Image 1: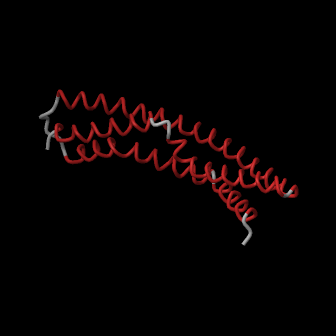
Image 2: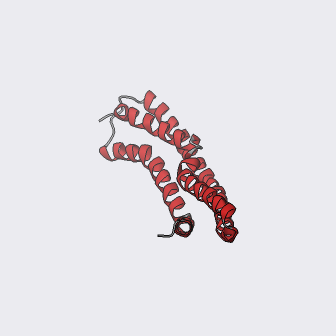
Image 3: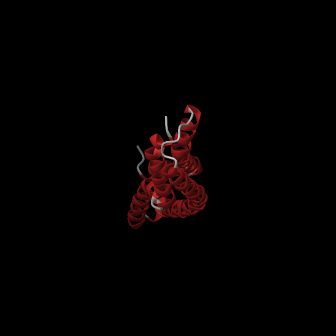
Length: 157
């Protein structure tokens, strides 16, 4: 097994880490389903307010939830900036490793080194995306429950 055998894995790792470092739309991808649902509920609460002045509390609650969601988006973006720094550093390190592999293409390596190169190339980017997803889910759990409660108040069964 040679170092050259792992050049494509390292290239993929550079792309994954650079992509996750530059993928700013991840905040929108995670927030958009909840944001769209809350926006629709806010519009429905506004329509109910026009026909029933007693629906003011539902409208205010929907407005408060929109504000809470915006705060959660800012918190998530701050966490995302930390992940960008880590993934950017990994992308640079992997690019340097790729340059080293280009010069030492036919160098024989041990299986453990090959597995380590594979893990370093693919692991951190995947872990960072899972970390961001889990942080978004845990940070917005109460908000999602509140949106569900608002939905039930707007559409009583």
